[in-house]
Image 1 (tube, rainbow, N blue to C red):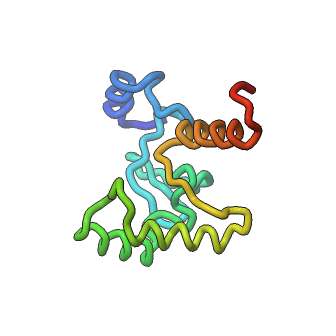
Image 2 (cartoon, rainbow, N blue to C red):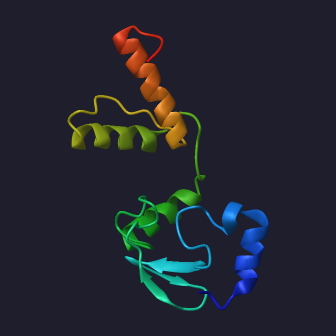
Amino acid sequence: MSSQPHWSDRARAVLPAGGFGNFDPDIIIREGHGSRVWDEDGNEFIDYPIGSGPMLLGHGHPEVRDVVLSQLDKSMTFFANNAAGIELAEEICRAVPAAERVRYVTSGGEAYMYALRLARAYTGRDKS
């Protein structure tokens, strides 16, 4: 248990059940490098879910960090088409033979909604 009840108390005041919903809310992660994370007390853990997926190469991977830092001068995200997004879609389509096209979404709920719309369009049905 964290010796920083201050963080846990603060979390309980603003988060349901005091946490993000997946792990012990008393473990407050401070930083990560590679496949490991450290909590506010300095305890080291292997990050098996690796940041819930997006850090496939680990926390703070030098090549990823360099690309992210170079992008920050240009902006952080665009809602409209952009060259980097198109290049990424091309790479995904090349790497995943079943992926003929890519749709970027911001949440699992949005992805689910698009999957339902696609299934309804394909089957011609408007209900399950």
